[in-house]
Image 1 (spheres, rainbow, N blue to C red):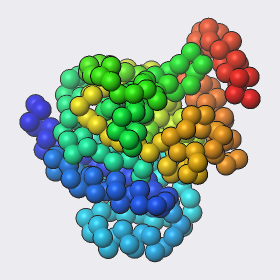
Image 2 (image 1 turned 120 degrees about the vertical axis):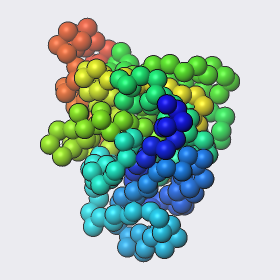
Image 3 (image 1 turned 135 degrees about the vertical axis):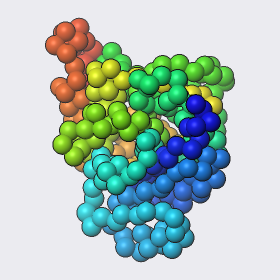
Image 4 (image 1 turned 60 degrees about the vertical axis):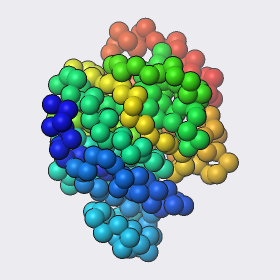
Length: 283
């Protein structure tokens, strides 16, 4: 079955704001994949015509869609997924670089169990030594907790295992799950714009009986905040300190939106002190 998966088409959807050379580095890493059965779809949110033309010229195999307005991350992903053909969808930030064996290793996760709809690899920071995420979990504060976030990679997370969900920067999904969760034409809720969309879809998936799985051999490198923060905020903790007012508002609003959409009354009654305490501490 794993040999068959190597011939399964993966749709890679990348959203870019056109900052620095992030997208080109990410595309180069995709083109080096040892698993060659994939299509690449880029949603260009740069609003710069010359940027899109340059990508089309230098990467002729890429399907690029340039928007005249900022679609934000969720709407851009929805556009890319809707135009894709693969049975598995890898949603990538443009500030991510994949190890050459990422696809080959990550696809193994979907073979383990037909109920696995989300797979995470080991996501490291650009230094290759610091963990960015080894799976997403729902915290008692009802935030998205990235397991291992900011810790040195010293072999602590080397076991394959079930997880709650996957980090939105390198989010690998089974199309069947996304189709089941889709509401009208939306896979990701466009009200989120950006931030917490990964927790929302993981929470929705878990409620629908889907599972997440972690494969440590599938390695990716993420420049945390590369696409939405200034240089002084890259890879720093407390993201809201480095965001503009609009993005900071989304960060605060979307946590509550995820709670309202997904939390049960019993869960809210159990966790409301932690939910309120978090807001007080962050305020």
